[in-house]
Length: 431
Image 1 (cartoon, rainbow, N blue to C red):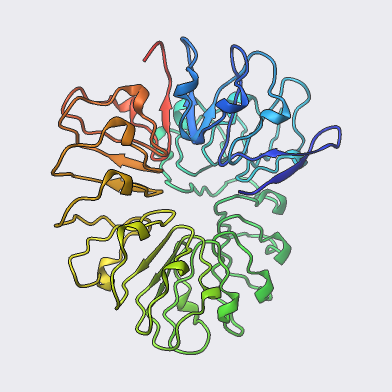
Image 2: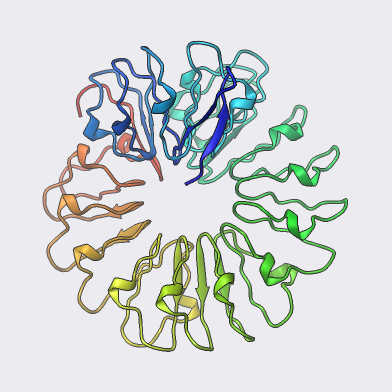
């Protein structure tokens, strides 16, 4: 977890911005208690009826609540990524916008109101006209808007990660290129300087000037560089997400830096050392030499190992995202390692036990035995259940990202199945 220090208006340093994504609270009644700020990602609620109960604030993304009463105190800003507050007192200054994800505003008029800060990761608004409506804030990661007139239509908000819009007006200034995911700019003016490559995910630059030095490859996910100079060494593979390496000997070729998520290695030379297994998401190794030890499975998302020795036991399936193994005997082939986050494999042997459903992303189970109990829906991202028994209640939609249910009882309405990451509820009364 990252701690982001923010200098408030009176200069005090606050380390309480701990949110994993964003908690927006502007409650109509009393403030939430600290223990109630639990959302890991996002619940957007624009409630017209009674407020949510504490037990209902369980979303893995973010609770957005708009408060008409007193503001949150600093100690209440505990969301796992970011709390953006445009308080009813003085507005935040630009230097105070330091969230782990980021709201970038190139504002031409007054500051954004609370209702405008709704993006699940980042809303880029260079608004010249009316504000976005709630239904239009649907981007799974980032909505880039350079609005010149009417609001975007729903069909325009489609990006699962990022909507890139080329602006018909002046280009973004360098200080505005701070997106936590990705800003792709084919700028007509001067290129970015090295110090300006600070994106939390990826800056793709086809630079016309001098290339980046190795020490400058510090992106939280991946900097793809088509470098004209010397190649990267292994120690320089430090991407927070993924470098795809098909190393045949010396350093990486340009064509070998391919993925933002996963390191696929089909190494013909010596194996990587333990210190080289640093990817924040996934290291895929189909090693021809000795296999990794169990203690070496440390990837932040998933280490898929097609080991030539004995297979992993169930207790060893501890990946932060998901290791699905349909172990029948022979190991997975390379063509079977396809999923960027999750390998879905249907098992011909006994099903996983409930305690084994620990995946941080998604457990897809089409179980031949008894269905999971409601309390067992613990997946960090998504549990897809085609349940033959009674349907889940709405209050039971607690998945870390989204529970999609194709229930044989009454189906969820479209308005209930909204976000690939987030359950958007615009509740008109009790559920």
